[in-house]
Image (cartoon, rainbow, N blue to C red):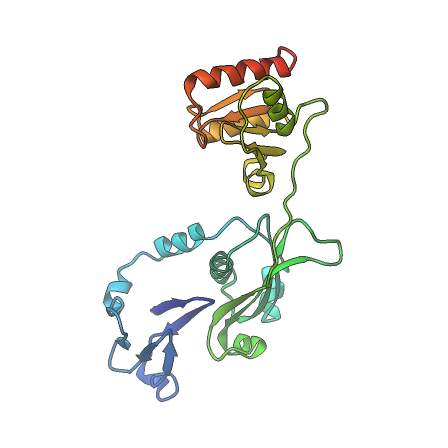
Amino acid sequence: MTDQRTTPGRRFRFPACTVRDMPTRCMLLVAVAGMLVVAGCSGSPTVTPSAAPSLSSTTRATQTPDLEEQRIRDEAPAFEVFASSSDYLRQNMGGAIRVEVDRTLTEVEANSIMNVLMLDYPDPGGYFVSINCSTGGTDKVDHRLANGKIALGRTGQAKVGFVMDGQMVEMVKGATCPVVIPVSSAGAPTAQQVVDGFASAGLPVTNARDNTGSNCSTRGCTQMVTTDDVTVLSFPNDAAATADVKTYGLANLHQSGTIVLSYAAARTPAKARLHYEATLVTLQGGRG
């Protein structure tokens, strides 16, 4: 059975000890996250934490491993792995694992990716992990977000410089993934052009500001202009605009071609919404 504890930046596994392992394994003394763990041969590890004790070994044994594995996988953001074959990594006792993500990660998210990799590469060895942006790099140089190491078994520990099995990740300071904004269909108006059209028509568009960088990477818009009265989003095509409305709901959104009007942030009154929608049709040359 395996007693697992996770600390930020590193995930350790402590095997249960047996009389056969004395004295090297059974008298292991490890300080983890301010917790003293003494693994003795008389039973489960004795824990003296500052807070409530962890689950006993008996309780852990009744948990379904598949549920714990699924939890670990669910916590990780989407990523793609590029690595040598499992046979090659097994024969060489580890190797390089390259990961690509499509957005900037937090350290917690990078750690969750490392935990998934420990599940996917269970063979003993030392693994060197690079986590990169899918954008911003070149054929020869990656756009690096973080570097990590995984150690499984004594040989793996020696390869990566660990004293026990586990993983660690270090973020590249200040690294972020570049935002790639889609290009609108030829002739389609931009969000800013629509806002300017509203202003020309005498409709309020107070305190207009461009929020493209902070929102369009997740919503797929080409431009987003927010005002105190209404928010306008432009999309690369009709299909993308339709998908956005389906995702974020019809109650506070209105689509016309590649343009979506959002009323939620400004709490646009129902009567004012009708004016914006009618004017938008005019700006689009009568297309509704």
